[in-house]
Length: 187
Image (spheres, rainbow, N blue to C red):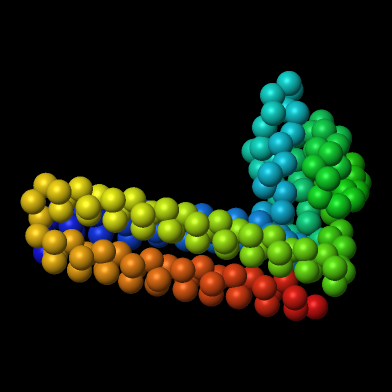
């Protein structure tokens, strides 16, 4: 196999690995009934006039499976953090005790669980779309090589390899979704 084809195959694997990592990070953000600091990752706080991510002005930890604890580095940030959590519309009710903020994560209803499964499925489908786009780009690169003189049989076998790689990553996407679905639906 020539170097150009090997480069395309390696690049395809690398891009698909990044797409899978992105999917994993998106699925982690989908709440699964237990408290997780990642639930608050999207929140930014007004820090002296500047929008700043919550994790840059406070420690966010889990006290137990149903409680998040936000401990600001400056006491003056308690109220702005509390307001930002309320404004994020996550269905969470922060409780400020003057030192830190406790957030009790409510148990998920059956309907909410189904909605979260739908969201997880949408994320997995987006991941698969990205994988198919990467496959398409790799195949286009292979076609260019064929026009520039690479033998057709080498290009065809490389396209088959690209499809095999893609199929493998689609299966990995499905497995991640399956695990997340079980996690969400487990009461």
